[in-house]
Length: 229
Image (tube, rainbow, N blue to C red; front, side, top):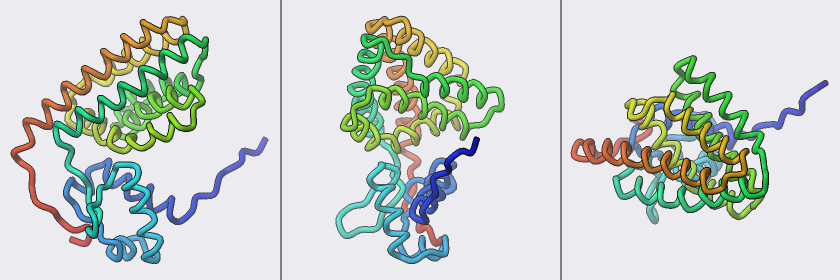
């Protein structure tokens, strides 16, 4: 049986390329992305580069002030706290709903398997991707387009936090896998309180270690650099 493959637009392709460079650290925090330089880098028209940059700004992987070019943000301790505060509000409601409604989020279960595979292969990018996929699948499984849009608006910054967590080995990937499984098992068992408690422990522990790392590194921040440098 043939599988349908969704064509990827040029804008999506440029978005994906920039996203990968940010999440692998090739584009460091404070790097400025000028539209024309970005267009030249990928061999596309300037409007295409602008559209890709705009999407990444909307997704939180880039930031831009009024009348200024976009840049890769350097997350502060306050940023991390606010991000996890927002994630907690959305994700605890999601797992409570799923457990109470007897849902078995199949995409989340698939993400658990992908996470285990990434851990065995020691792939940082695979671990981060499957970590995001697990949490995203929980919210997506609720079936609320508005909740999902709110979550998608912070997912880029969540990825940046997960990259920090993995590249600096702030938490064991195997312990993260166990915590994901505890959340999933509580949902499947219909234990809304247990699912919320497991998720809260998971998020609080991640926030604590990431904030500690950012606080320790905060004094070593450097100035901005251009994507064309």
